[in-house]
Image (cartoon, rainbow, N blue to C red):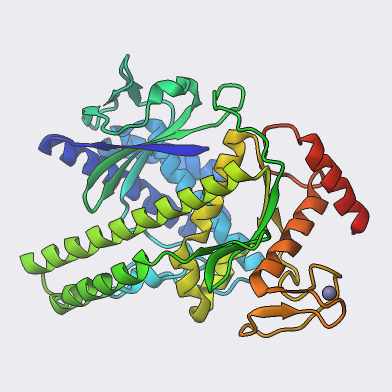
Length: 416
Ligand SMILES: [Zn+2]
C-alpha cells in the first residue's frame, strides 16, 4: 500500500460537511470503545453489530457512508488489539483511562497504554464506496449524505497511472494549513508500470546511528539533516508563545488560537522536510544497489529511551524505512530487514566479538587487525546478515534475484 495525496480547497459549506464527517467517525470510534469498556470480552462481530445499532439510533451516523463508519470501528479494534498484544508482551505504558488528559499531555501519552478516547480526530476514511472519481480523475465527489460533494484534486501526481480498483481507501484529512485527500493504493507489480532499473551489481548494508543519519557498508555516510536543528529552535519558540497565551479553565483568546496555528504550521513544515529527506535517501540507495539490508529496529522501544529518542524520531527512521520498502517494491530491488544482534560489536572481517562502548567511534579488531569506522563495520555485518537471510525470510522484492547476487548469497550462506 502506498499513499497519493492531493490538496483540496473546500468551500465553507464543504468545510462544515467534512468537519461533521470527521466528528462522526470520532463519535463512532469513542462510542464503540465505551461499549467495549462496559462489556469486556465482547468480540469483533458484536462491536460491528453495535455500530449498526448506532446507525439506526443516530441520524448523523446514518448519514456517513457505512464503510466509513466501519473504518471507525476498525480503528477502535486496532487500539484494542494493540492493547492486548502489549499486555501479552508486557510492554510498559499507561494503564489508565482518562478521557480528558491535562493540557499538553495528550501529545506525550504513550500509545502502548489502555485504549484512549479521541478528542482530536483529524481524518475520515472511506473504503471503496461513498465517493466517485471524475472521468479525468482530477475531481472527486463524495456521495454519502454528509453533503461534502465535489472537490478538485490539486497536485502533480497523476491518478490515471493506477487502476481504480487499486484504490482501497480514500481519506480526507484536516491539517494546520488546510484539507487534503489521500488515496491508499495497493501496489500490484503486474498492474504498475514502473521502469525497471538496470542492475547495479551492488548490495549494501546500512546502519542508522546517532552520529549520522546512516552509514553504509561501502564507507559512505549520510549526515543527519541540519534543517531540523534550525527548525527546532523556531518550533520551541512558537511553543513557548503558545503556552504563554494559554488560559487554564477559560475559553481561549484569539491570540492563543493564532499562536496555536503558527505552531502547527511550523510542525507541518518540519514533518514535510523530514519526509522529503527520507524519500531522497531511500531512492538513492535503491537506485544504486540491488539489495539493501538494514536493521529491524524496534523504533518504539528506542524512542522511549529519552537520550536516543530525539535523534531517532527527528531523523525519521521509520519514514525512511517505509520509503525504502516502497522503492524496492517499485523497482524490483530487494530490501531486507535483519534482526539487530551484535552488529556493532562483532568484527565484520573475522566475526570475533570486539566490545566497545557507545563513545568508541572506531572499530579496531585485536584478532585480525581490521580497522573501520564503527558504523561502517556495523553496516558490513548487517549486509552479511542480509545476504545470509535472503530466500529464508519474507523480503520486499518483486523482481527475480539477479544471478550475480545469487552467487553472493550462496557464499554468505556458506560462511554462516
Ligand atoms: Zn577481526
